[in-house]
Length: 183
Image (cartoon, rainbow, N blue to C red; front, side, top):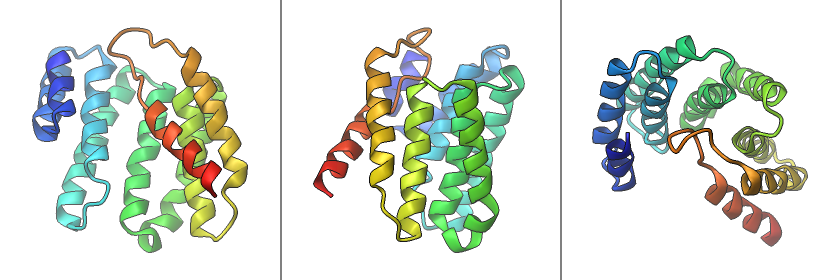
């Protein structure tokens, strides 16, 4: 797993995703490698303009996330990752995918929040989604800044179960809080 994280940190996303996927196949009872393989595929899809490549990337992300879900159902980290896959589609083409996926994303964040109200990634990801939705509809994003600030407080006290459990999001939340204060 450390080697896969190293690849990812070095920007070698294909190598990272492939290694996470191989680890997932070898450790069929561990949700983390499939989760990370899905996450790498999802994160690298944001900003893609080629629909064929995007479709391949997000279908692969979904396939891997389905493996993680089968191992660990009702896992808030996996639920957030599912919301991110849908968000990647909405970000690619909001007019096409927004109507069918926005409600699903909102429902996923509500479910994750019910399961883990103090998980910083759940609180932060939901707030970021809410901010994006508000921006899209020309509404004020300020009310969601408080949620991002709350997520930062949660990040400060969050201890992952292991060195490999999800621990991402703090830096992005810090960036968003800064932009909130500038608005």
